[in-house]
Length: 533
Image (cartoon, rainbow, N blue to C red; front, side):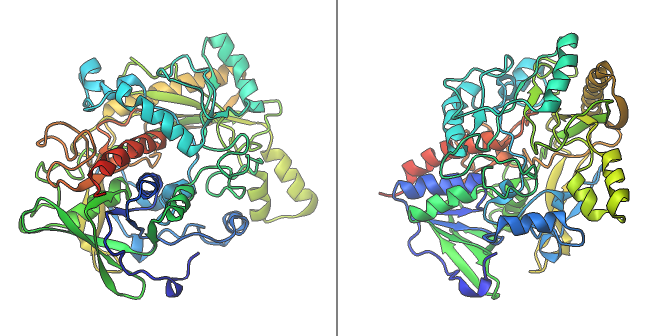
């Protein structure tokens, strides 16, 4: 981890672009703009995790050691309200690389219906862009991340070329599921993954540690650190531990002029620039805009619509698992290699859902052994009893946009700098619960066809989020019903752009990172046209 005492964290002079956040959105935008010759400053609230990933893996595996990504404590305080508690810190990372430091790595395109949900089904909203508009940027994003995949999904939207890397082969447990799915008429297909199936972009191929979440020691899985490194090589300056606390605008209220940030030594600095891009996630983007209220923007910056923070969405998890009287080899692969989108489009209820065949069902023998209270033959017997016969399925279920699900700030609770913390108000509606129940029904049918003894289920009554923060600065053509336009530029300020999943009008049921990357490539193209030569 970077040493706060050894780094110059003063502002960049004469910056063309200031980017807040060094995750996948900020990293891609920074690289593209720096490569074009722009002077780029990137401000990241968290540190650089530049230590040995093997050490981080041990930190994750061994009992009694801390979270390898240092989330929590006074810096990361939050509050939650609504019908469902939202565990905000359970799966986010503040640091160079963002949540790609510990993500699962599945990357698929949204379907065409996701851009036209209101037109097709009379629910949710339509995007101001179509799948065809984003299609070429999806292809660029797949090359940027290094996606391994195959053109074997009959339900996927049309694409223009193969994935950059060949798909990973189906796992042993996938082959077990295939027997039941064939009898049931369920089509299995490969999962696109942002991890190397062969050497790519200076990173090694996957060597099968099986600990993709939360640590990939080999570097085969993409993290936004790679784009940050490329951006720095192209001349960008990335300042870590720079906690942006406010955006300042000019006297007209039409342009942002500076980002005010605090460094570990307690100093406060102003980073000026011609263009500003927020890429710090669906929660922190909102918090920063609301903290930047002024006389001209009493309800927060870029919030003339009153919708900053509104329509917060996540994906909900449905799952089911049990045991088979045969070897399943769970945990030999740390990521999914097969799934099905067969039940995604035109479903009833209308919420999209995708079904996953999990390769990490049941306990890990390594973690069990490290945390066991016994040794020798007793431990061996315990491991044999718990390992090797588990199977499980998962699902992501779409949550439709609802104005009453929102992110705001809690003025009564402050962080270690004295700023109000994020407050998440979140509930799960009946329609989403019906979609979760439908996912469980399909999962149970498959497991029973396999002859598995079902031991657990996650469904409508005990579901949880996938930690995909979406929708809080939604995209649209009408300034009264959206925060940014189709280019991801705010309606209210001509030089303020928002990158990431917070601009999604709907969330579908696909993991959002590939769409985040595609929009970042597109946004960088738009910002580049406005940067002075």
